[in-house]
Image (tube, helix red, strand yellow):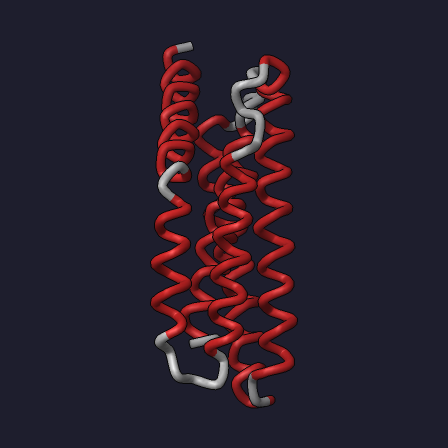
Length: 164
C-alpha cells in the first residue's frame, strides 16, 4: 500500500513538473527559432522547421486535458500518456524520414544502426520504469510515459545532431 502511494505521488509530481515546464515553452520557441536562423548550414531550414514542430507538439501535449475528471483515473492517465507518446513518435518518424532524404548513404547507414540500438535502449528503460509498479495498474502508464519522454528527447537529439 505504501509503495503504491509513493508511486502515485511520484507520478503526479512528474506530471505537474511537466505541466509547469510546458507553460514556459512559447518564449523558448521564439529563442530557439531565432537562434537557428543564425545557423548557416544547408539544413538550417530543416532545423528551424523541426524545432518549430517540436515546440508545437510540446504545446499540444501541454493542452491535453489532464485536469478533466475522466482523466483522473489510471485508465484516463494511460490514455493521455498514449496520446502524448503517439505525438512524439509521429514526429520522430517524420524527422527520420527527412534525414533519409538529406543524409548521405554512409551517414544514414550509421544513423540506422544507432536508431536500432536506441529503440532497444528506449524499451529497456521503459520496462525498468514499469518495474516500479510491477503487476499494478500503474505499470503500463509508467512504461508509456517513459517511452514518451525518451522519444521526445530523441527527436531533439536528431534535430540538433543531424540537421544543424
